[in-house]
Length: 170
Length: 111
Ligand SMILES: [Fe+2]
Ligand SMILES: [Fe+2]
Image 1: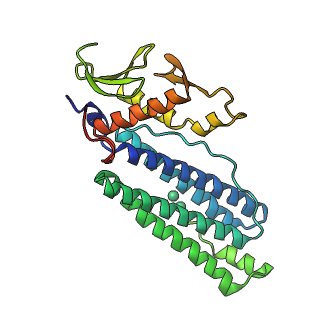
Image 2: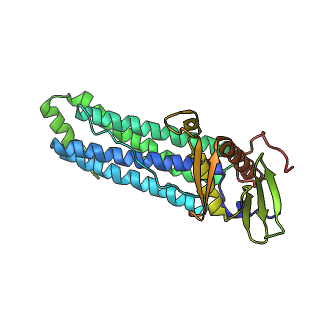
Image 3: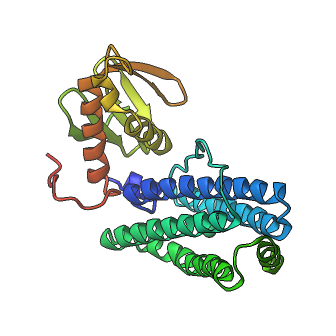
Protein backbone atom coordinates (compact mmCIF):
# COMPACT_ATOMS: atom_id res chain seq x y z
CA UNK A 1 0.00 0.00 0.00
CA UNK A 2 1.25 3.46 -0.86
CA UNK A 3 1.61 6.15 1.80
CA UNK A 4 -0.81 8.43 -0.01
CA UNK A 5 -1.81 10.41 3.05
CA UNK A 6 1.76 10.83 4.22
CA UNK A 7 2.79 11.92 0.73
CA UNK A 8 0.12 14.63 0.84
CA UNK A 9 0.74 15.95 4.31
CA UNK A 10 4.05 16.27 6.11
CA UNK A 11 2.78 17.08 9.61
CA UNK A 12 0.66 15.05 12.04
CA UNK A 13 -3.06 15.72 12.13
CA UNK A 14 -2.82 16.50 15.84
CA UNK A 15 -0.25 19.20 15.08
CA UNK A 16 -2.56 20.53 12.38
CA UNK A 17 -5.43 20.76 14.89
CA UNK A 18 -3.30 22.59 17.42
CA UNK A 19 -1.94 24.96 14.77
CA UNK A 20 -5.49 25.70 13.65
CA UNK A 21 -6.36 26.53 17.25
CA UNK A 22 -3.30 28.79 17.32
CA UNK A 23 -4.45 30.53 14.14
CA UNK A 24 -7.68 31.27 15.95
CA UNK A 25 -5.80 32.55 18.99
CA UNK A 26 -3.60 34.90 16.94
CA UNK A 27 -6.70 36.17 15.13
CA UNK A 28 -8.40 36.82 18.44
CA UNK A 29 -5.28 38.60 19.74
CA UNK A 30 -5.30 40.81 16.65
CA UNK A 31 -8.96 41.72 17.20
CA UNK A 32 -8.31 42.37 20.87
CA UNK A 33 -5.40 44.75 20.11
CA UNK A 34 -7.63 46.57 17.69
CA UNK A 35 -10.19 47.09 20.47
CA UNK A 36 -7.38 48.42 22.68
CA UNK A 37 -6.26 50.75 19.89
CA UNK A 38 -9.77 52.15 19.73
CA UNK A 39 -9.90 52.70 23.49
CA UNK A 40 -6.55 54.53 23.46
CA UNK A 41 -7.42 56.58 20.38
CA UNK A 42 -10.67 57.77 21.89
CA UNK A 43 -8.90 59.00 25.02
CA UNK A 44 -6.09 60.80 23.29
CA UNK A 45 -3.37 58.29 24.15
CA UNK A 46 -1.97 58.58 20.68
CA UNK A 47 1.30 56.73 21.13
CA UNK A 48 -0.45 53.84 22.87
CA UNK A 49 -3.04 53.74 20.10
CA UNK A 50 -0.29 53.58 17.49
CA UNK A 51 1.39 50.82 19.46
CA UNK A 52 -1.84 48.81 19.61
CA UNK A 53 -2.54 49.24 15.89
CA UNK A 54 0.92 47.89 15.22
CA UNK A 55 0.36 44.96 17.57
CA UNK A 56 -2.91 44.17 15.83
CA UNK A 57 -1.11 44.06 12.49
CA UNK A 58 1.66 41.87 13.94
CA UNK A 59 -0.79 39.35 15.37
CA UNK A 60 -2.41 39.10 12.00
CA UNK A 61 1.01 38.42 10.49
CA UNK A 62 1.54 35.64 13.04
CA UNK A 63 -1.81 34.20 12.10
CA UNK A 64 -0.92 34.30 8.40
CA UNK A 65 2.46 32.71 9.03
CA UNK A 66 0.86 29.70 10.70
CA UNK A 67 -1.98 29.60 8.20
CA UNK A 68 0.45 29.41 5.31
CA UNK A 69 2.58 26.82 7.09
CA UNK A 70 -0.39 24.50 7.62
CA UNK A 71 -1.39 24.72 3.98
CA UNK A 72 2.19 24.42 2.73
CA UNK A 73 2.49 21.19 4.70
CA UNK A 74 -0.55 19.84 2.89
CA UNK A 75 -2.92 20.47 5.79
CA UNK A 76 -6.24 22.21 5.93
CA UNK A 77 -5.90 25.70 7.44
CA UNK A 78 -9.16 26.99 8.85
CA UNK A 79 -10.05 30.66 8.63
CA UNK A 80 -10.93 31.62 12.20
CA UNK A 81 -14.25 32.96 13.43
CA UNK A 82 -13.62 35.73 15.94
CA UNK A 83 -16.35 35.99 18.55
CA UNK A 84 -17.09 39.07 20.63
CA UNK A 85 -14.05 41.11 21.60
CA UNK A 86 -13.79 43.03 24.86
CA UNK A 87 -13.73 46.81 24.37
CA UNK A 88 -14.10 47.84 28.02
CA UNK A 89 -11.12 48.94 30.07
CA UNK A 90 -11.06 51.02 33.21
CA UNK A 91 -7.59 52.50 32.72
CA UNK A 92 -4.58 52.67 30.44
CA UNK A 93 -2.79 50.40 32.87
CA UNK A 94 -5.54 47.81 32.57
CA UNK A 95 -5.16 47.90 28.80
CA UNK A 96 -1.49 46.94 29.10
CA UNK A 97 -2.19 44.41 31.84
CA UNK A 98 -4.69 42.73 29.55
CA UNK A 99 -2.13 42.81 26.74
CA UNK A 100 0.47 41.12 28.94
CA UNK A 101 -1.86 38.38 30.13
CA UNK A 102 -2.95 37.79 26.55
CA UNK A 103 0.69 37.42 25.49
CA UNK A 104 1.35 35.00 28.36
CA UNK A 105 -1.59 32.87 27.22
CA UNK A 106 -0.15 32.79 23.71
CA UNK A 107 3.29 31.80 25.04
CA UNK A 108 1.73 28.93 27.00
CA UNK A 109 -0.21 27.79 23.99
CA UNK A 110 2.88 27.81 21.73
CA UNK A 111 4.80 25.88 24.38
CA UNK A 112 2.06 23.26 24.52
CA UNK A 113 2.21 22.75 20.75
CA UNK A 114 6.00 22.47 20.80
CA UNK A 115 5.81 19.93 23.63
CA UNK A 116 3.23 17.85 21.75
CA UNK A 117 5.19 18.07 18.48
CA UNK A 118 8.29 16.86 20.27
CA UNK A 119 6.38 13.98 21.81
CA UNK A 120 4.99 12.98 18.39
CA UNK A 121 8.39 13.36 16.69
CA UNK A 122 6.83 16.07 14.54
CA UNK A 123 10.11 17.93 14.30
CA UNK A 124 9.16 20.15 11.37
CA UNK A 125 6.45 21.69 13.50
CA UNK A 126 8.78 22.03 16.45
CA UNK A 127 11.33 23.77 14.25
CA UNK A 128 8.74 26.07 12.70
CA UNK A 129 7.62 27.24 16.13
CA UNK A 130 11.11 28.22 17.33
CA UNK A 131 10.61 31.67 15.81
CA UNK A 132 7.40 32.08 17.81
CA UNK A 133 9.10 31.14 21.07
CA UNK A 134 11.65 33.93 20.65
CA UNK A 135 8.95 36.33 19.52
CA UNK A 136 6.83 35.62 22.59
CA UNK A 137 9.71 36.32 24.98
CA UNK A 138 10.16 39.70 23.31
CA UNK A 139 6.44 40.47 23.39
CA UNK A 140 6.17 39.68 27.07
CA UNK A 141 9.18 41.84 27.84
CA UNK A 142 7.77 44.78 25.88
CA UNK A 143 4.52 44.68 27.85
CA UNK A 144 6.29 44.22 31.18
CA UNK A 145 8.55 47.21 30.49
CA UNK A 146 5.53 49.38 29.76
CA UNK A 147 3.78 48.23 32.93
CA UNK A 148 6.93 49.16 34.90
CA UNK A 149 6.43 52.75 33.76
CA UNK A 150 3.23 52.93 35.80
CA UNK A 151 5.17 51.90 38.89
CA UNK A 152 7.87 54.47 38.25
CA UNK A 153 5.83 57.43 37.08
CA UNK A 154 2.54 56.95 38.87
CA UNK A 155 -1.03 56.93 37.64
CA UNK A 156 -2.25 60.51 37.75
CA UNK A 157 -3.26 62.46 34.66
CA UNK A 158 0.16 63.97 33.94
CA UNK A 159 1.93 60.69 34.58
CA UNK A 160 -0.34 58.88 32.16
CA UNK A 161 0.36 61.50 29.50
CA UNK A 162 4.11 61.10 30.05
CA UNK A 163 3.85 57.33 29.95
CA UNK A 164 1.93 57.51 26.70
CA UNK A 165 4.61 59.72 25.16
CA UNK A 166 7.23 57.13 26.04
CA UNK A 167 5.50 54.31 24.25
CA UNK A 168 7.34 53.51 21.10
CA UNK A 169 5.44 52.80 17.93
CA UNK A 170 8.56 51.62 16.08
CA UNK B 1 -12.57 2.08 -8.68
CA UNK B 2 -11.07 -1.31 -7.74
CA UNK B 3 -8.61 -2.49 -6.69
CA UNK B 4 -8.67 -0.73 -3.41
CA UNK B 5 -7.46 -1.71 -0.03
CA UNK B 6 -9.63 -1.78 3.04
CA UNK B 7 -7.95 0.27 5.75
CA UNK B 8 -10.44 -0.19 8.57
CA UNK B 9 -14.08 -0.57 9.46
CA UNK B 10 -16.22 0.79 12.23
CA UNK B 11 -19.62 -0.57 13.18
CA UNK B 12 -21.45 0.98 10.21
CA UNK B 13 -18.76 2.20 7.82
CA UNK B 14 -15.66 1.10 5.96
CA UNK B 15 -12.66 3.10 4.87
CA UNK B 16 -10.66 2.23 1.73
CA UNK B 17 -7.60 3.52 -0.05
CA UNK B 18 -7.10 3.35 -3.78
CA UNK B 19 -3.41 3.39 -4.68
CA UNK B 20 -4.19 3.67 -8.35
CA UNK B 21 -6.43 6.72 -8.01
CA UNK B 22 -4.43 8.14 -5.10
CA UNK B 23 -7.61 8.74 -3.18
CA UNK B 24 -9.86 7.29 -0.49
CA UNK B 25 -13.33 5.79 -0.38
CA UNK B 26 -15.77 5.59 2.47
CA UNK B 27 -18.61 3.12 2.29
CA UNK B 28 -21.35 4.94 4.13
CA UNK B 29 -23.88 2.19 3.65
CA UNK B 30 -26.26 4.11 1.39
CA UNK B 31 -23.42 5.33 -0.79
CA UNK B 32 -19.76 4.86 -1.62
CA UNK B 33 -18.07 8.24 -1.48
CA UNK B 34 -14.77 9.06 -3.16
CA UNK B 35 -12.53 11.54 -1.36
CA UNK B 36 -9.29 13.22 -2.25
CA UNK B 37 -6.93 13.78 0.65
CA UNK B 38 -8.07 17.42 1.03
CA UNK B 39 -11.67 16.32 1.05
CA UNK B 40 -10.83 13.75 3.68
CA UNK B 41 -9.29 16.46 5.88
CA UNK B 42 -12.35 18.63 5.35
CA UNK B 43 -14.66 15.77 6.34
CA UNK B 44 -12.61 15.15 9.47
CA UNK B 45 -12.87 18.85 10.33
CA UNK B 46 -16.64 18.75 9.90
CA UNK B 47 -17.13 15.65 11.98
CA UNK B 48 -14.82 16.97 14.69
CA UNK B 49 -16.68 20.25 14.94
CA UNK B 50 -20.00 18.52 15.61
CA UNK B 51 -21.04 19.22 19.17
CA UNK B 52 -22.26 15.81 20.23
CA UNK B 53 -23.42 17.13 23.61
CA UNK B 54 -26.14 19.05 21.79
CA UNK B 55 -27.64 15.68 20.91
CA UNK B 56 -28.49 15.20 24.56
CA UNK B 57 -29.96 18.67 24.91
CA UNK B 58 -33.68 18.94 24.10
CA UNK B 59 -33.37 22.57 22.97
CA UNK B 60 -30.07 22.54 21.10
CA UNK B 61 -30.75 19.53 18.90
CA UNK B 62 -34.13 17.98 19.79
CA UNK B 63 -34.01 15.17 17.21
CA UNK B 64 -30.31 14.33 17.48
CA UNK B 65 -29.52 14.56 13.76
CA UNK B 66 -26.62 16.13 11.91
CA UNK B 67 -26.53 17.12 8.28
CA UNK B 68 -23.05 16.53 6.94
CA UNK B 69 -22.13 17.79 3.50
CA UNK B 70 -19.23 16.12 1.74
CA UNK B 71 -16.87 17.11 -1.05
CA UNK B 72 -17.98 20.72 -1.44
CA UNK B 73 -21.64 19.80 -1.02
CA UNK B 74 -21.60 17.13 -3.67
CA UNK B 75 -23.10 14.72 -1.14
CA UNK B 76 -25.41 15.29 1.79
CA UNK B 77 -25.84 12.86 4.65
CA UNK B 78 -28.13 12.88 7.62
CA UNK B 79 -26.54 11.11 10.56
CA UNK B 80 -27.94 10.26 13.96
CA UNK B 81 -25.96 10.37 17.19
CA UNK B 82 -24.62 6.83 16.93
CA UNK B 83 -23.65 7.29 13.31
CA UNK B 84 -21.75 10.49 14.09
CA UNK B 85 -19.81 8.75 16.85
CA UNK B 86 -19.18 5.79 14.59
CA UNK B 87 -17.88 8.01 11.79
CA UNK B 88 -15.57 9.71 14.28
CA UNK B 89 -14.22 6.34 15.30
CA UNK B 90 -13.75 5.29 11.68
CA UNK B 91 -11.78 8.45 10.88
CA UNK B 92 -9.68 8.29 14.04
CA UNK B 93 -8.67 4.74 13.15
CA UNK B 94 -8.07 5.56 9.52
CA UNK B 95 -5.81 8.53 10.27
CA UNK B 96 -3.85 6.42 12.66
CA UNK B 97 -3.39 3.63 10.14
CA UNK B 98 -2.53 6.09 7.39
CA UNK B 99 0.41 7.06 9.60
CA UNK B 100 -0.29 10.76 9.91
CA UNK B 101 -1.65 10.65 13.44
CA UNK B 102 0.32 10.64 16.65
CA UNK B 103 1.23 7.17 17.80
CA UNK B 104 -1.40 6.34 20.34
CA UNK B 105 -1.45 2.84 21.79
CA UNK B 106 -5.20 2.35 21.30
CA UNK B 107 -4.89 0.86 17.80
CA UNK B 108 -2.22 -1.55 16.74
CA UNK B 109 -3.10 -3.59 13.71
CA UNK B 110 -4.58 -3.16 10.28
CA UNK B 111 -7.08 -5.93 10.93
FE1 LIG C 1 1.26 36.50 18.19
FE1 LIG D 1 1.87 39.04 20.40
